[in-house]
Length: 249
Ligand SMILES: [Fe+2]
Image (cartoon, rainbow, N blue to C red):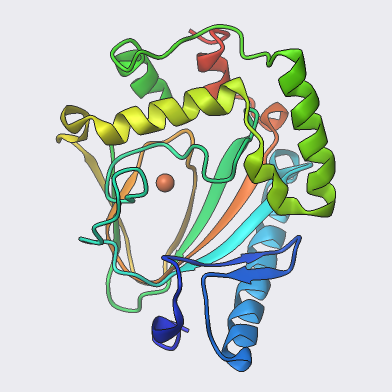
């Protein structure tokens, strides 16, 4: 998989959507696509079972998202600022609306000889305290107005049939998170050192609530990434939702 897919990529990631059974990012002969699909589906199922067994309370009622393979070298990819993985950010908006639910990502560095290198500027809480005012972040009620609530309910209902429709949904929470995310990527002084640096060695695995810890991947090639949406109610510690709504100070 590591070398074999390179010629068939259409996007920066090859992603498998378990609900829809759909594979995106690849234009390849049927045999290659079927093999990629079964590798990602099997891996995603293994990760899901592992985490559900290890953390039954935390994963209760969660929604498995994509299983993705990231085949491209992260260093110097030259993507646009808002898409760039090399700029420090918190995850927001990549999956449409979460309404405050948490984004859990489970990574495996498939590279047999090179580390995957991350940098961070700290937790959401630290960044909120330090930069919310400078970023012009509003705080206070995140309750959507009635028309938006009705729209979100419709999208959720549709999502049971076509999981990707969730992407068109939005909410005050998701818009504020996206705004903070964009401010981070658009503010050169914020991107300056000092950074904490994390090296994930060949064939190691790690997981992160990626809406709650700032991160950028500055080096590495060939990783598997599984994404899950964890219900906010399962979180015992203050979450971004609580800071944005003013409930946690
Ligand atoms: Fe990210």
